[in-house]
Length: 212
Image (cartoon, rainbow, N blue to C red; front, side, top):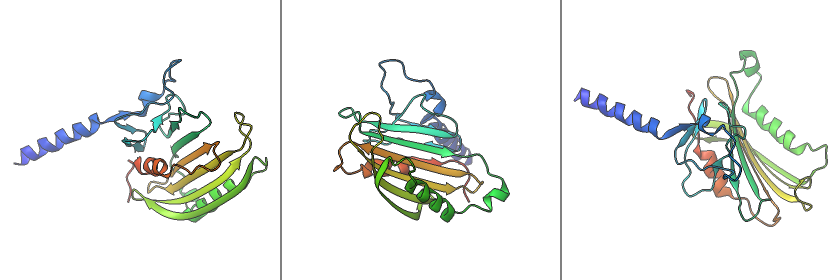
């Protein structure tokens, strides 16, 4: 019975490994004429985190576009409107020195991200609105900042783009800063953000570093 259980656990681990691919598979830029994003049907593993498949969604990994061990770059391409862009970035910092960690808290991260979104010395963003909170997703506590504005500085559009952004930043148990950032720009000012797609991406991101 014990041998059967060990064999079953070993086989199940092989299945899990087979259902995962490395970010290294997507570090080469796409060939001319190839799709700008690739939708993996398996979990994509990075260094310390992974992104699970999102059935029914249009999220794809952008090959060669910032894919590194500690950073992921994904996007949704709107084939009907090239000015409608949705971009997601995930980053995991190196371990921070203990003295620096003592000075960092979720409240501090929340305040820093809020001030950063509100500060616009260029005058590019109009009608800025920001809200923030502390939340827990997939067992990780995050400082979450949500913002919206009119982006008047696009090189590709004479008209302002509606900007919606969500940023989550947390502190892992081994002393790293874990950040998920999503932004959507849309030329249709009266359109609503695709909250379903945004939420599904956020919940598809999982830490693989040990958590207390």
